[in-house]
Length: 509
Ligand code: MCA
Ligand code: AMP
Image 1 (cartoon, protein in one colour):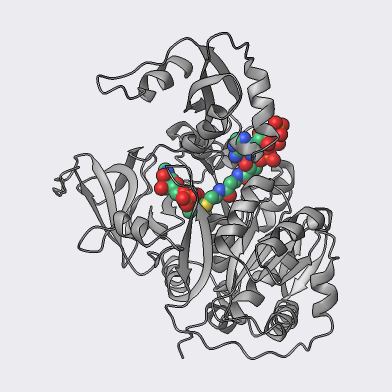
Image 2: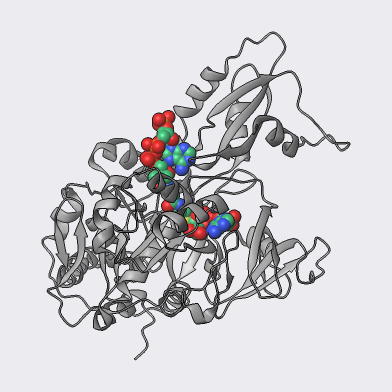
């Protein structure tokens, strides 16, 4: 039987023994499959009781908890649209997302209720609930009054299941609209391609140590485990020592490269602790060959690197099974089954094997478009329906893709995307600033970090530390450049455009 509602498809894969542990937390709690089913039914019943219009958005900014996972599942099963928001976002960022998405429901932490509810009610939100990481808050209090039985909402496969905001190169964040079919098709492809082992084959156990407000932790990791009936070990935050403690009882781990770098710094990482592991997966940012090699040497495991985007979910992957080919460090593998990937130059000409160009993709997981931005959506697709990723790469004769750069001005720091245009906009608005440029430079821990290069207005006495402090008071912490340099001029090309490559060279040393 096919299920168009993603929750129904995940639920159909729960193991026969619903009393078994589905999620074990690092605080020692165990949630059974029945708990996930019952608790998500109660929250779904609450959401349905609110009689929200079709397509209503449920915006969520809460700490990582199993209850937050349950809220996600409840939103799916009620046929509503989940809108996760990074916990680092501060008020200016939240105001934008709430104003743009106009959610019918906002769920936030208790300590943030005052300012978020004020902002949400002003934007027309009808309901604001709280959810705290210690299993308290009005969402759970209210849903406790609802039954544990719920019929999964009928949805069309193309109905929206989630909106994931990804920052725009010009500063304004864009909401990528993902449908039930987008998410389900990707989960199904990865289940086969990564050879997930169901309970009948010994059962995979996933260590979930990523945040759950982005594609990696929310979709790739959670859907991967649930659609396979596999247990998750749930780490509230990434702590390499906690991950080491769980490695001997796990089989699958997913991380951004920074997680691998930090695990390698642990003396306790050796072949013995990973003796039961089957698969280490890396993505969201480039994995350095050095990390790939060090990991192989220390653990005997070859990391599988894959590549994706919020707009497309997963696109390419190195092979999991030996018969599908080797895992090649420095590459992101081959297009997943069902994905068409091509490399084109600026004039639209398809590049021959081994030549560099912009990566364009088509496939069942490619999004419907950007929320309320039809022109922007149209710009990002070619006339024959390929999505322009903004990544620049090469495909080799065996079909392996290597990402060599980006045509979009983007910094990826510790797996989070930071758009220089947004940071520059805030710096340029500060008193005494004439102009600024933000660039990414290599960093051993985060892969890449931001450096702000600023020109002061004549006579203004600016200090780099003060500029950074002002930014920190306004923006999410991961967006704050790690350095701020004051200069008298910026390098420019003949067209007057700032040459960021020269700044990257200069400040990356
Ligand atoms: C924290 N800081 C950061 C970052 N994280 N700065 C730059 N980049 C970051 N990613 C700041 C903190 O605010 C702090 O600043 C200082 O750096 C040191 O923080 P630290 O304690 O080391 O950070 P942490 O709390 O340990 O977090 C690091 C982290 C985290 C665990 C690597 O950033 C993380 O979970 N990253 C994963 C992101 C992710 O899941 N991305 C997937 C996107 P101060 O001391 O001044 O406050 S999905 C995606 O990209 C696509 C689709 C895909 O392909 O998957
Ligand atoms: P996001 O919009 O947050 O989903 O980030 C998507 C971007 O992350 C892609 O366009 C790539 O630039 C980058 N990315 C994801 N996975 C990888 C990878 N394995 N190697 C290099 N870049 C990656």
